[in-house]
Length: 144
Image (cartoon, rainbow, N blue to C red; front, side, top):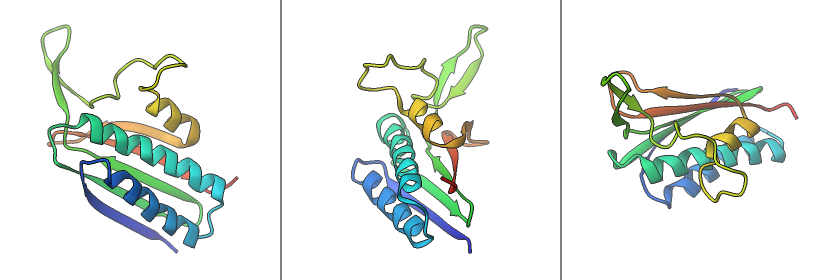
């Protein structure tokens, strides 16, 4: 069985728990172990929090999740890329908040990407083609 979720959410703090609970209910229904569900929920929460905090160009964001019997693939898509200038003077789009150096161990903010990489597999931050924004992609195997 394959389950696909697609949600368009307002860019506010109330949306993150909604999407986490919706995805968790689907994973629970598929019999995914609690520790795997917890890893996915935390990674998803970090990706959503980054969009909510940093993607100021968009009023909404999307979450797409695909689950089969072996893994869950999640994409959090925002519309808030920032235009910056490279050393050579060329404009380059960067995903807000994802290009910063790793935060020190005691920092209160800035460890989302580190957590996502520690809890999931195949973490990628992709630039949206022909649109502003970024796609945060991660996968998590159901094997414990």
